[in-house]
Length: 480
Image (cartoon, rainbow, N blue to C red; front, side, top):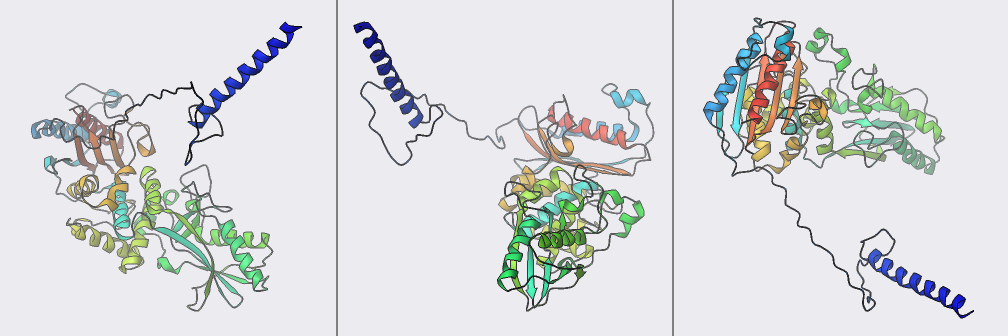
């Protein structure tokens, strides 16, 4: 009888002590639980001791200023090899996969490249760096810098609804990443939602005893929205559409694809907004186009992700229409004209304010789609250098938004198993007769180099040779 009573008492005491011990560790966040010691203290039971080991966390290294410098001779040797490979496909260092598939040929390629020591800002070596060449999507580096400088990294595009009598105006201001339904504050694409805008708008309309309005789409902020003539000539309609100030998911026709656009992205967004209003009990009829009257009252609005986040998506995935939005919105802010010439003028203005040669930016667009675009490699390298090591903090998102070799964006499948894997961060570029890469690479010794390399004017079918030559060159830099 005594034994049967003693055993439960022992077990109960063990459970109590165990509970105290676990509760103490929970309070110190050493084990999972709901207790905490934030902003308050508890008296620990006697005999309970906690030993928490402190682990030192190293600070981010950033650019290693003490790493061994790269010499001009080292880079010049790589530049000579780059030119040889780009123009013939031949490699003096042994054949690669590209060479095995086809013998050396005469591609007719022109090569331009600049390599800058990121720490000192001094040009290590260059090849035709002062020649204006076709940059392809490396142009988006200029687009990003233009917007970050003009609008600021924290800028957000506003999509709003305005009421004048019984007329409702949906006004776009640059957000091409709208969601058709509810917005997601944790997302970039779909950060703001037309469903949310419709719900807020309907609530305000009902407060005014309105259950029926005429809906108008106002996209006038972006002015002329015709496609660039050179885009039409290239017949690359799947990669571009007219630059509009509002669209659902960039105006893409299929959610699973990153190319192929609906016929009229802004109108499609307005029609979706109308459908959402109807769900809220507001009749709108057919959507028309008109500019918002000055006396119209704003009744609702939603805002996009921040500009630095939009820049991230623009550069990582080489988004053509977002690049045009970055420049078009900057042109509107600067007053240089809501059209393609206005985009180029604001970009040149920004480059001039940065003490770079703005006149060297001779593009027709900001996305790099036009085959008639011209930029000097030294300008792209200098701009990237300023973003990486300059005092302009507004430009820093440009560097962090660049694709990383063998990891993400348009470089996710390049440099796999190479020295440059994870060590190169750069903007890609590809057109019919042009390939480019602009960014930063860390050498084997830990030295960071800023570079731009462009290969253009090559014969049809030589794009693979140009791309291989560029990747071999950058991988060579990483191996120094």
